[in-house]
Image: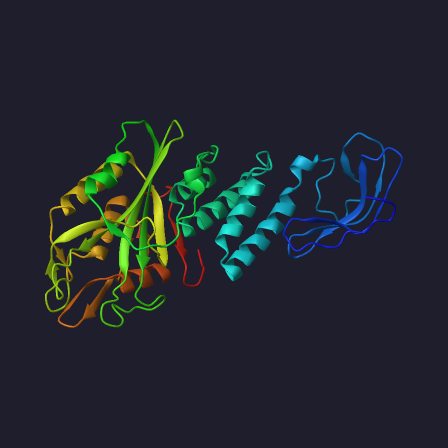
Length: 365
């Protein structure tokens, strides 16, 4: 930059904007006279003069500055600056719903070298990564991020599959063994995660159905992380096998059952937690038992399945039953609304990790 050069403010969060800069004789050290950060999280340098060639960046007057004192460029953020930056990113994600952009911004911060900061700051960052990863259906990345926030930090996954956004798509029937066998890989587990997802017929309303056949769906995700860093994530749900037009309807509620791969299924509400190895094995056994049962709209449907698995994992969702012509039962409209209204309980002992809860209706979490 030449004498008196001016830089225009940029639109991206976290951009350093130099308003005026004078060039000294050595040309590499930058001494910042004043710096502020506005509500967008953008750092603005009001004036600077270049000194010798040490390559260091030092804040000369730090009273109004959020830049770290005596910092290298590789550690751009101070803890206070990160709090402001995360607030801006969270607000923008809530407004724009551009979760892909949000994840990119959060991962850039995570990779910038912040591990010496307070647990609270690191926990907030990893929790944000967990939330947005769940919304992008990157469940392995979400599980690791929540684990880092609540338990013990380890590097995020390095394999590209963990970061490939799963676009919403129709679920396809699959054999249960193909869903469960990868989870039983014989490797030493570090932790297990259970997620319960609900797609309501009408998001944000306690309605059992809308139109003729839109009843919503409830499904689960199981994640296993191994001590060697490998991970497995499987999302699936319990469905009727529609052998006739009236099968699994109020007129003929029973039908054969089938499992479908729900990795790309949309959801409105999600509640999850870390589970023990014993709970994981009990869940596997329960799922295998479901493989030999018939679907019934009134008492053995997708929500019955999801809530039964949730119970084993220590999650109890109350007031999940609704009515329809000629029958009633647990259903996604009621279960999802109960999650939004806080009508759920963590049955784990006091002092355990608790639950992580998200909804895509209001964006609350």
